[in-house]
Image (cartoon, rainbow, N blue to C red; front, side, top):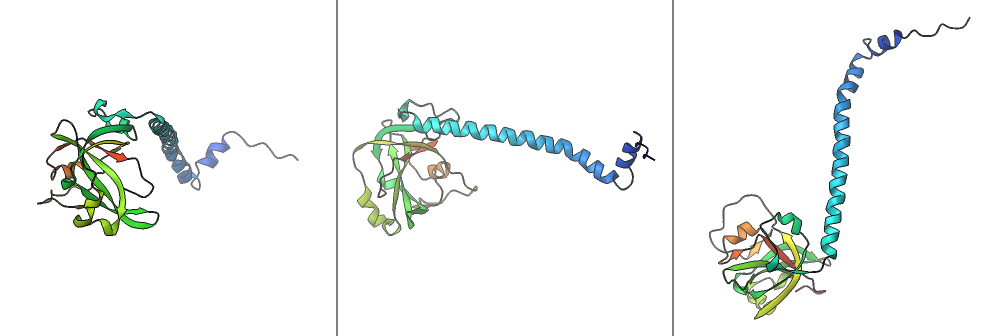
Length: 204
């Protein structure tokens, strides 16, 4: 004799009996969360693609004079923009950024304020990498570039760190290029971004 087909009413009873009740409840509760996570992942993917496309456009664009850019807008929109800027370096106020490596060798990056034609303003320029042994006040002078300069590079954003009290005196050594913190020891009004100078194969 053929078995009788299951009645429709037996399906809910199987799902919601004591054995399966908690599992079913957890699945039902998890469904909205998983749906949100799916949409979140899609949104993140869209944002990532848009960001990558924006960076690619900035890297491919022709350089613009920094003086012609509106830095009051969202600086994120200017990240990696190729720029040129004219001014004179003030080597008396330069600092070094420690913890940098180049081809496996320890060293520092040399950060120098470039004084703009409006003499009360300056932009920090990351001039590149030098050997760790050269990062002493007595040896830094060999990297000085006196007189008017035309700097080519890309816009970079301030490297924010944990909030700390401003140093009591000017310090040479830094571990982040935090423009707000550096402003406390500069005699110029710093622009809210810095310029990463086009690299030389051997550093500065």
